[in-house]
Length: 68
Image 1 (tube, rainbow, N blue to C red):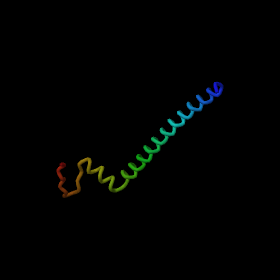
Image 2 (cartoon, helix red, strand yellow):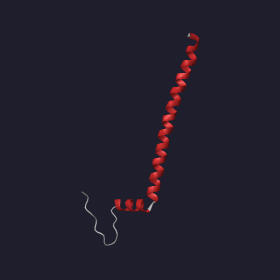
Image 3 (cartoon, rainbow, N blue to C red):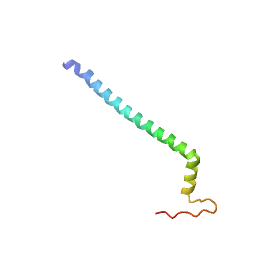
Image 4 (cartoon, rainbow, N blue to C red):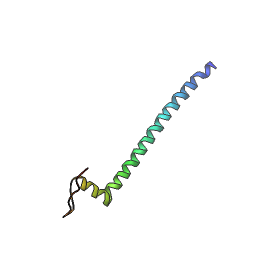
């Protein structure tokens, strides 16, 4: 039993590193997907209009609605 202690310690350490790396990859993948969706939205006509209106621009003859 005593002689098999070291391999089990190495196994637990490697398992811990593997789990941490997997969690980090999942987090990075979710961030990548979020950024792709944000880029796609910003490139769409609706996204461009939202960005322009956030800067205070209005269409010709349009009166802005007061924020609530």
